[in-house]
Length: 381
Image 1: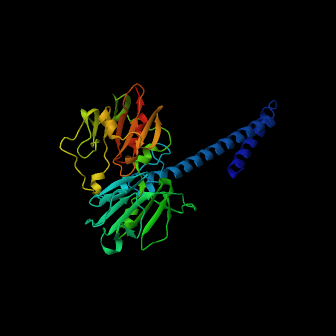
Image 2 (image 1 turned 60 degrees about the horizontal axis):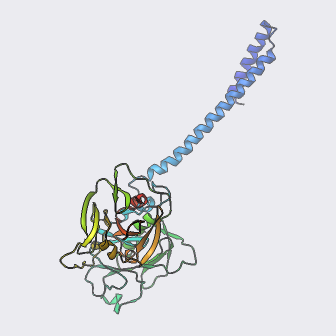
Image 3 (image 1 turned 60 degrees about the vertical axis):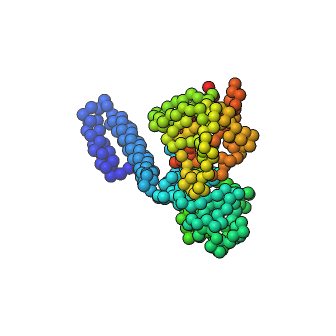
């Protein structure tokens, strides 16, 4: 009890004694008892008020750091926050510098200058005249397909991204943009990391090696296929019914209906376009064209294509799948060729009552939230 309470008690005691003298029928003890009960009630109210203020202070202490993590903070901090969709972390487009292109390999994404050459497991960067090169599906070796990195026969900076064959024996002790990694011993000045959560090994050698490694993030494909609750469809999206499925897509996308599938570059997805194709004819009539092999050719797009005919099914190499998932009770498989350099996520759905599967290609641009939301919205008619 503090000094103020003592003063109040003494004042009330004096008044009680005076009242007792004036009204003998009402004992002072009863008045003092009532006074004690009021003091106890006041003390409890003060304690509850202090607890509420303490809770408010704690809430403010939590809210302030969250406010400091609003857009504009460094990507390395922003990428480790839980996403707005719950426990599914998103890809971080802010890690891609201007003039660079994000490239997806399995669950990982790195970014390189758009003019760099990019090759798959059977390709080579020997003799390339660009300032950098990327080899997907290849583990770094000092001798590369008969040409030496030190002999100037390959680009000054070369990056290798390959599947992680086995998990490291020790737990990762470092993080790149919030992603746990294990640094491998230097080999001729290389930067090499095992990334268990993304199931890849990333190695870079050359003057821009550190800058490329610094763009590492999870791929939009990994966001789309990650476990977790479904993403809610935004209010501005539109629902579509085609090819035996119902699905939602951004309302700003232009809808194109066609009977052809693919184009001369064998890429059915166009940026900002939802293509609904009966896929009865091949879309290229002048002969297949080859891509230049530069990073900009593999830039992910933000569109979608649905093919509901034989041509789309034949192009999807049925039976050769990387993995299969279930979408609202329907089996959807991802082809092997969709694993390497991913501009879009391809799904092959075998729907009841349809003779050929429906092929769905969803662009992998941005954080992966759009891809995930579309995938979560798909359901059979």
